Image (cartoon, rainbow, N blue to C red; front, side):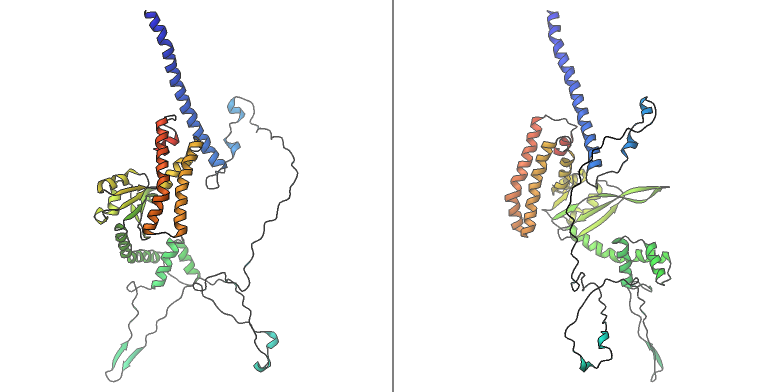
Length: 411
């Protein structure tokens, strides 16, 4: 009886062992597929993803494999292909000579009248101007620094023998040589056009202005302090928005050691009135969300739109806010899973694409308010319901590995 039982158990044990081996092999195959997809994307993908690497430098030499020499592999056989003709690309049509290629409300126009040689020396009664031809040329002048020279006459009143003089114009910075226009230009050049202060200092010197580098740094700090009330007012307005969008992004700020920078975080906060503020914190702890939004300002029906970082979900739960997550972040996960699960990842991407097309239709029709909401309920909601129904169906099948990138995307 015992021998019969042992004989019956052996095939079962073998099947269990084979199932374990098969599961490990499937997991390893999935891991190798992900590596291959990463390599294919960085080698043959779009320019933003492609890496220019020397493939031969990545190969092992024959000596490393136990062979002799370190000779590169022979060149593959080549085949001569007949040449073909290609249409010559059309050159862009230059603008007409009298056509405006600039915004004359933003650029100063200097008018130069050119005399006609044939009319030189003639009396105006001897010719008639019937029309004129106009052409434009884009020219450049040295940096448009201007010295404002205020002349204030000192007057002596004869009756009272009193000296009087007009007061100096009030500046945004007391007793400063910098006009408000210079402050605005310096800050815009630095933070919008990424023109460092040392280069602005060089440009000033080239135009005959002798100032010190520390003076520019002090002006920058003073100008930013002038903007602080504006930033605070804008942040308060964002906090009262019904829909608030928030994210966090790392930035190198400050030095921890020689040659090493420590990582801080910018937390951009965006309100429904197209306002945005960038708050800086030295880390991405959960408490930073509450510090940035300050719950006492949030409306009762507020919506917080973020990615899947747990700090946002926790904050929304604590305050009873509606937590809406970003479709772009979700879509990225399915896009990365195409190399391992191309068919199912493509289904998810197509469904998300339908939602995007609904938003395009809304923008094209310029829908707002209740009309936008009704359009989304009619066209987007069925797609979203189909999407999550498809997700549930995939989880019920249980025919993919827990380590699969598709599992991560659906989760």
